[in-house]
Amino acid sequence: MTKTRRLFLPVLLILSLGGIFLAYFFFTPSPADAFLNAPTPAATQENLWAHVEIAKPTYTPVILPTVAPTQIPIATETPAVLAMEIVNEITVALEQAQQIEADPPPAPVSGGSKYILVDISDQHMYVYENDALIYSFVASTGINNATRVGVFAVQSKFDNAYGATWDIWMPNWLGIYWAGGLENGIHALPILPNGATLWEGFLGRPVSYGCVVLGTYESKLLYDWAEMGTTVEIQW
Picture 1 (cartoon, rainbow, N blue to C red):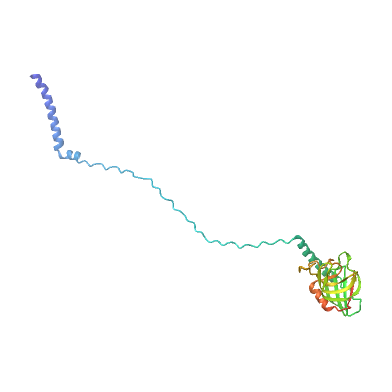
Picture 2: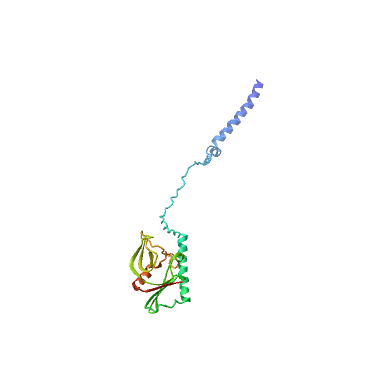
């Protein structure tokens, strides 16, 4: 009995002390309130994010009206042969002009009122009236010395003569001598059947078949001036 009492007293003491502690904890305002009413800590804010695809702004270029460049006409190349002919013609004309300045035309020897002198060496014609030089023309004589030298006279006159041998027309024809069955004369640049002008651009050099050839304008002046029987002298 005594042993049981000894064990019961410590247990009772422990229970008493526990009850006192609990009563103090719950019934004392400050500690209880401090524990029970303790502020709830603020929740930490979460980092909310999401992947969003934002469309890239597009750039629409402004198309300005363009003006088509004006096409520059391309120059057509002149054939080398034609270019050479033009250069040669200019050169011959210049040389003849210089020669005329350096050497005055020969004095007429006919003594008549009208006189035509053809100089084969410089491919030139000098026209005199009353011993005065009134015309000076570039001329072309026959190739291979086909034009005869000598003193002749105008023996025929036609506005337009036809050369059947070569199928050409010879405007402002002044016949001066016969060569076999053909008459040679002074005339303008011949006209071909297709209307083209023969030997154009070649005056000032021997090109004909024997006649003395002048430019179209010059031959018309001579034709209107010359008379039947007008003296024509051809020399070197």
